[in-house]
Amino acid sequence: MNKTYLFSLLVLLFCGLSFTACNDQDYQENNLGMDPLTLTAEQSTDVLQEINHAANALTLNWTTGNNGGTGNRIYYTLQLAKAGTHFAEPYAALSQEGQTYSWSVSQESLNALVLDQFGGVPGQKCDIEARVLTQTPGWEKTLSDSLSFSVTPYQPVTTTLYLIGDATPNGWNADNATAMERVDNGIFEWEGNLKTGALKFITTKGQFLPSYNKGTDGQAVLRTSDSEPDEQWQIEEDHYYKVEANLLTGDVTFTQAEGNRPAFDHLYFVGNMTDWNFETMTPDALDPFLFRIGRVFDKGGEFKFGTAKGSWENMYKATVDNAPYTDTRMQLVSGYDPDHKWFLKDEETGKAYKICVDIRKGQERMLMKAFTPYSTIWMVGDATPAGWSIDNATALQATDNPYIFTWTGTLNAGELKFTCDKRSDWNGAWFLCAAGNDKEPTGQTEKMLFIDKSDEELKNQYLDINVGDVDQKWKISQSGTYTITLNQLSETVSIVKQ
Image (cartoon, rainbow, N blue to C red; front, side, top):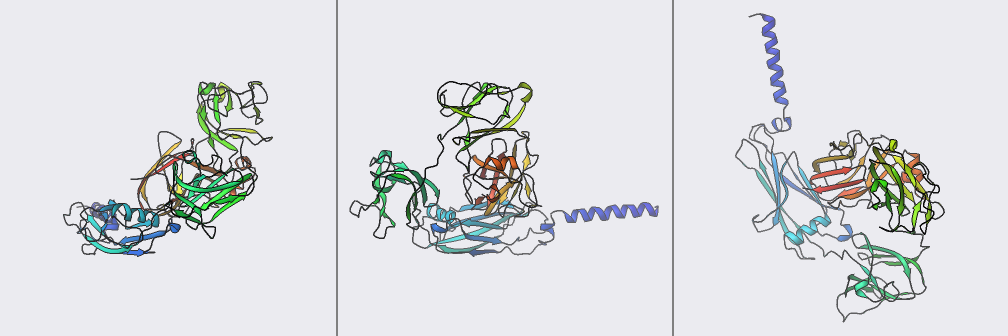
């Protein structure tokens, strides 16, 4: 046989073997047949506290184990169960996950698991067992390892809180009590006018108990019976107040404020392109005077902005008739006239625009700009596969819709946000959590906050806020498989645990 031909065959054979040996090397190199599967726990605390609800409570780690020398991927199932039940009805924290070697859970999520799944009692220690099992295609043997740990759960405080009393807008009517906004676990806020008089807090509309009353030290105390003291806070002066109640610490404050709020809580886009239907605009997450909408304009014509759905009075309009969309001047018209509107030409259609409307009295502005979608969106954060490395940020997958990206994979417990440009100085375009910093995803479609720290036009939309200081992230409390769907035109996202 020709020596050159024989040498070529040997080279091809060697390359083929080398390529095969590198396939799934995570399994072939690390699992030659006898590595044990070992489960370990890193427990931050055994007594859970709601004040630390976002903190990590427990991390379970396991070694790779082995695949019987098959070279095939190993799939892991992690189960938790109440001690002594022999995993008769286990909770599956992970199910058939490949290349996953840890699971973390926050204090809040572990607390809910203990109470809802394992029959735990607040204030009493609960013993739990955990086990990890493997399944390897082509190998019938299942490996497993287990451990036990103990945890003491807490009774979560109410998720709703209402103001009631003759100092409040709706008096002592429990059916119409004034709702406060929940900003975090046990923390509620409200702003508005209070009158001279008394007030307290109730947890359920229509029911006077349970309530939070003023204790002897001025702190909020839980009242569950008519036989308990019914002390209330006293408002000494009619004024606009900011009320803050922290049920976890008992702190309650009443701060007089100027009441600088927008004249309208809602704004609507309406015109030829909506067939004169009222499309709801979104209040800005940082500035309550700003309202936003993003949409594709397939046809042109006139448009203006309403303050009440279906009403043609109290509308924000252009200052001249047929104003170009680049004209930022705007006026509030209380009646019907004048009825000046902006006009989008036909040749300006066939693309997307984003609109920002500022309704500050005396500073009204209409800011409209064509929107070119980003070709790629990435996510960064210690919850993501690449952590905080922006150079190696994890890309979302594009779809047939240029504005929508998706991704499915494993997220760790931790923070995440989305970058549109991967700027190494971190001062670029971002999609952030509109609800605030370190907020748990709702599991449904929710609004995002778009910030471009390098765009002077966008920064100038915020008259009183330095967007360079804004950094609001989502907080993943429980690791697992998630599906993300992001729409950069509507500025919405869903982060859904599978």
